[in-house]
Image 1 (tube, one colour):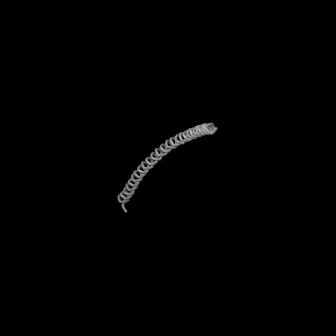
Image 2 (cartoon, rainbow, N blue to C red; image 1 turned 90 degrees about the horizontal axis):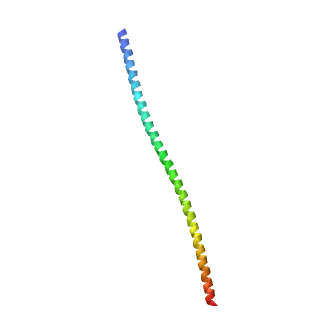
Image 3 (cartoon, rainbow, N blue to C red; image 1 turned 30 degrees about the vertical axis):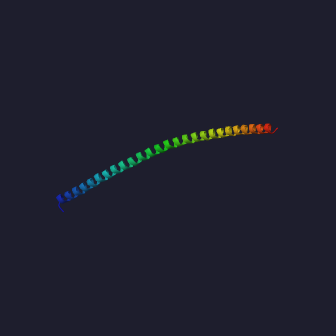
Length: 97
């Protein structure tokens, strides 16, 4: 094999390696882009979930306060009914005398 043929053979191998390197770089850049998009999407989802958890916690607190208020209202209503019942019993007792 002549020197010229050997040089051409080496150059073609070198060109093939350079081409493979460039293709590999393209793949790595594309992969990096996809991974970045996925990570950004995950961050956005986590942020949204955090906001939803805060909102949910606030709603739970509000619900507990509403339940306490309803219980207080029910107790007050029961007291009123008890007073009305007492008054009615007194009226009935007074009328029966």
